[in-house]
Structure formats: structure tokens, C-alpha cells
Length: 496
Figure 1: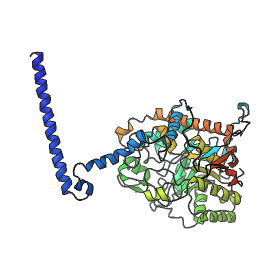
Figure 2 (figure 1 turned 180 degrees about the vertical axis):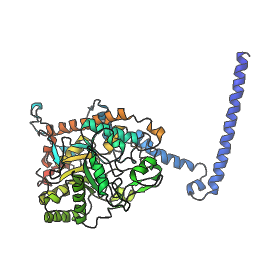
Figure 3 (figure 1 turned 135 degrees about the vertical axis):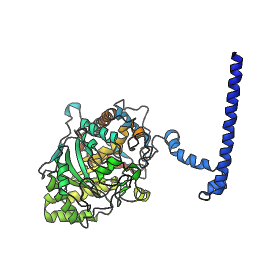
Figure 4 (figure 1 turned 90 degrees about the vertical axis):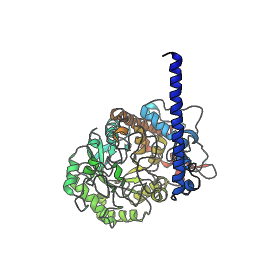
């Protein structure tokens, strides 16, 4: 067959295929037109058949286009591009410098600025971060030199390779990893890092058939040398007043076994501990867990009403200082989660900028500041936010989403759908294939190392030798007038 014949044959074939495609497209449009006119659930589709479907397509794609094409570096929520970019570079351990000036506006109300001194700390005067001990009254107190740690993320909310990478990364960085409320999985233990076991309202992993604490299961968890502390979660920033929510689509057989729940069913934790009716009950559980395990035990909460804190301090005063929680993890109302009702996420609880000074102030006034260590959590993913939290009285910070970015999270906002494109929050094996725990663990370690390093840069520019020496006087905040005022005008009582 000549080349001309081959060409004509191919042309006929493609012409036929083209006509078939056009015909199928016409049939599809006719079908969609009829289907749209017949249905009454969506008014837009009924009134504007076929064309109305594009509205839902554009709405779905809007998140993508805003993130990559339209949003400016400092506009996006919950984390803008500038913040994510710093984390990505820190995790990859590449150049973190920028050029030609900051894109951050310095006259917007609420903006914080650190006050450099004419006599910054010289290299020879820099001191290592001082180790801090939690639970000095316990049989097995815990001492760590790290300031920045990995906040609570459960196996279930996160995938197997993600938890594995976090475990190895935390071990390399020398920080702790909080297990989240989903129980202790083999993947938390894989890296040999320090662990904080979280006891959520459902008490997964340490509950009996009635949903109460099981002392024998507590002992079994405490036997692991990696488990250094226990955290009783009362509430979480993204959903105060509501327990954990793990959609049934993410509850596979392994997760169901670890949590002790049916496979494929929604994992809904109670909105509070069934034992808690007063502050007495809180201290009773803290003492029970501490006595059974021998390890530091604290509480986690997001603040709203603060009267219970005053009542808690009153009861500690009555019982004695030894009865106090060893630490208080304070979550911010703008904390993150895999799934939460929007009204709670948007409108309930105090953000850290208000709740952290309140908590520290109460502890100072009641003489408990040295006894109870404060762990701040909630959007503290970059050095400036960590430095601010330390200046306002935090002893440690814990970040979940910062470490998710280090794993490769792109803020796709699909954590609750089991469709995470980076494999971090999905149990779909195909989507998990792109998440290499060995590579990502290195990035987690790099991120935490560089977070501490750049935190030191801020502290040294302010003239202190290590970050925990930062105080409110080192920070100014911009007022509505566009002018700034030193934070010690508001928080002069905070003398750490």
C-alpha cells in the first residue's frame, strides 16, 4: 500500500472516530439536558440545564485556582504561601533566605515585631538550649532539650507511612511525637522516638468495655520505654466541646483493631470524659494515670470559659502542689484537625494570642508557674510564631500542621475525605505510594532542626543567649493606628 493510501486510510479512520466522538457528545448533552430538567434537587441545574453544571465544576476547582494563581503570598488561609514556603525550604534543608524586601505588611493591626538590640548575642556567647524537666514529682520524670515538638496526630487521621516518617523524623530531631487519641500503633514505635500518649475522651487503647480507664492497659502502654508522658485531652482547638471525628471511610481493619471499634464505622469520640463532672475529677484522673504509669501526666484543652481554671487552682491549693498536672497543653481555637463541624472550628474557643497570656497569668498568680509546664499549640509553624509564644510564657510548643507540611502536605483541604493527594491523610494504598517514609523522615528532622536554628536567630538578635529568655519586652504589636506598642505594657507580670 502506497504512502498516499496509508494517509487516506488514516484520514478516514480519524474522521470516523471524530464523528463518533461528536455523536456521543451530542447524546451526552441531550441526556444531561433531560436529566437536569427532570430533577428538582438543584434549582440552578433545572433552570439552566447543562450550563448550570459548570457552576459546580468551577466551585470545586476554585480552591485550586485561588491557591496557585490568584492568592497573594500573605493572603491564604489557614496558612499562606509565605509560611508554607519557609517550611518546605526548611524541610528540604535548602536556602531559606529571601531577596528585595519582605512582602509582610508592617502596619496592619495585630502584626508582631521583635525588637533587636544594639548589642546582639555574639556567637561565642550563645548557650545551648537549657534542658527542661517535666514531672519532677514523678517516679520517671522526663527531660528534653528541644523546644519544638510534634503535636497530636493519630494513626487513622494520618496514614501508616506518614506516622512512620514522623516517628523516625522525631527520633532524628530529638523531639517528642504525640500519638493523638487513636491509640498506640506499631508505626509510632518504629522510629524509637520519645512519645506522648494521648488519652482522648474515647480512651482508645486504654479503655475497658464500659469506656472507662483500664489500669492494666495503662501499664502495658507505660512499659514501652519510648512512651515518656501521658496527656489527657479534654478539648481540641478546632472542635472544642466535640470529640474526635474519624470518618468511617478511613476506619480500616487495622485502625479498628487498635481503637477497638467496628471496621468501616465512624469513630466518634464523646464530647467529654464521662468521669469528669468537676475539677476534682480532673485531678483524680491525673493522679491515677501518674500513679499507675509512674510518668508525667498533663491535660490538654482549648480555653473558653476560664472559671474552671481558677477552680482547678483552688483545688490544687487544697490538695497540695503535688496534685497538679505536670503540664498543660494549651490549644488555640484556630488549631487544625482532619474533620470538625464548621460552627465549632470557626466560632468556638479563644485563639492562642488571648488564651496563652490568660493561662500563664493565672499560673503565676497562683504560684504554679514552675510546677506546671506550658505547651502551646496552634499554627506555630514558623520561628516568629514560636518566639512569640515563648515570650508570652510557653515552655514548649507543639506543631502538627508544620510537620505535615514537612511531610509534603499541600493544603489540599481533603483530610476528611480519604483522598489526600500526598498520601498523608489517606489509607488508599495507591495514594500512599508517593510517600516514602525514609525520605520524609529526613525532611521532618530537617524542619525541626531549622525551626530551632531560626528561632535562635530571632532570640540572638534580641540580645538573649537562648530562646526561652525572650520576654514580652522583646515584642511589639501594631495597634489600629498603625503604630506599635511593647507587649510588656500588657503583660508586665510575666517574669519567667
